[in-house]
Amino acid sequence: MRVVPPRQVAVLSIANYDSICSTYGSHAGEQAIASLREFAIRNGVDPGYMRRFGNNTLLLRLDDLPRDKFLSVICSMADQVQDYVVPDYKDARPVVRVGAMSERALRSFVNDAASDLLAYMNHVDCRAAFLAGDELDIWQKLNTTGVELLSHEQLKHIDPFTGLLTIDRFFSLLQEIVEAQESFNTDITVLYLDIDDFKSFNRAFDHDAGDELLLFVANKIAKAFPTDIVAHLTVDRFAVVSDSSDVVRKCAALHEQTRSFREAFAPELKCGAFVLEKEVRSAHIALDCAKLACESIKGRFDVAYRSFDGDLKERFFTRRYVARHAEEAVHDNWIRAFAQPVVCTSTGKLCGFEALARWDDPERGILSPAIFIPTLEDAHLIHKLDACMVDEVCHYLSECQQQGEEVVPASINLSRLDFQLCDALEMVISSCKRWNIPYDLLAIEVTESALNDRSDLRAEMDRFRAAGFEVWMDDFGCGYSSLNLLKDYEFDVLKVDMEFLRDLEVNERSKTIVASVISMAKRLGIRTLVEGVETTAHHEFLRSLGCDMMQGYLFGKPRPLAIGAL
Image (cartoon, rainbow, N blue to C red; front, side, top):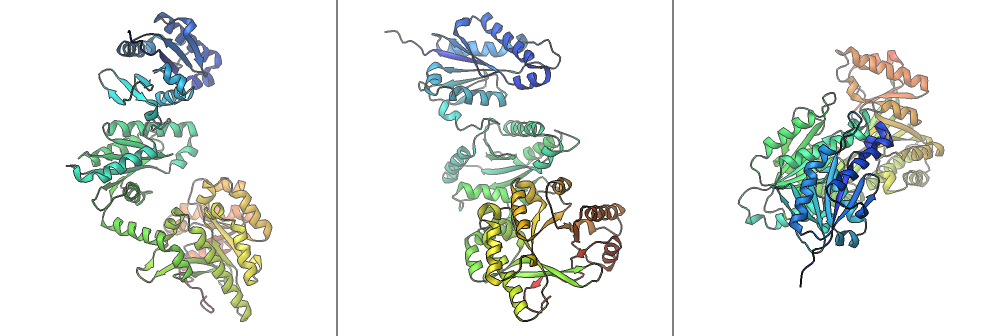
């Protein structure tokens, strides 16, 4: 009995169809599709076995071809089509992708299979791709033909945007390696790569340019590590598992290639590395170690690569300790509120204080806020710390009232995650009611970066102001969209970032910027508070500008919150 091979479906897709239409009009896109249809007919495809899929794709049924013959036809199409489909419009050359699947795969998965294959082809530079149905269980690159054979289940492990592995597949493969690492004869390195300040790039140009950068970086990483595990983790973050002895050089090359993508901006690709250790038995811990190494160099322009070392190891285990003991620390008062004075610029008298969290651990001593605050945010426990701070401040203000002490307002920092993890306004109101504290004695500080990260915070800020609380923008000027935020939000106070005072005595531009910010805020009816005031020269300069409030070591370091401490 003759075995009839499965019917095959070829896929011809114009990857830049939308771009052609938006630049030259829909008729230009249709002209490209018409050329693609003519090309298929010239290659012997019956027009009756041809149908359009979406706007930019033709599905062509090629019957009764053995698999090797079918693949050669696909390769031939891939070789010819780019030169055949030539438009009448300058710079509108279609980018044609050629793919194929068995009709069984197409019918089994309806249009999901075709959509997944197209998404893969449109972002991966391969001559042709073949999606096998149930009759094939193979995924391998045939370098001699440039054809990729894929099963649909395996295609599900591929990120459709970049063509790299998905995060779930990455962790699955890494866990297998972690458990079998003793059988390897070479070091296995886990890499965590992050495009530093990608949001700034997106806003400086546009989201299309941002997508181009992501695809550029993804392709460069894949080419640098062609035989290794390469995955797209989140928007601007990637991961690699490699046994290469040349990892450092490859990462350096990737850094320079990324900087060259847009010379006017020179995006930075940071890389953290972790060499697998036998005591590490979790893929997540392995990647976390590489991630910590990467995060330690973000924002720096003098280094692009760091390996997980002894210092980072201590920090890593401290972070794990913090996450596991956070609730105990709140309950047992290891975390306490400290206060840093805020003074009136014109009089030099105390007019308020900022509440700051400090962790004095019975085992590890004083823990840095730079360690425990980001850790609690990552662990989604930060709202517990912030609720503790609010309640302790309200308790302190209540004691001041009862003992006849001078009562000055307090400002409290809220994390952007507080608004996601709990009802932040209700949390603050609850403590005020518990200790009978007027709302006008509390100001809520939110950082500029938090407002950029959460587009829905405007409604939350409006709720706080409507309830009678002041809302302050912290770290004004440290980011790239401060002025946009002033347009979109209402603030009672701008806290000017201390970096502007670092070199005030020798940098006239810093003086000009600070003077302009204070002048602008006055015209907008917003009070100003400048952080980092450390010298009398700072004080005199700010007073001459009419700055409302100051905070810094000139007036006092943070101290335990207690009666008579301020």
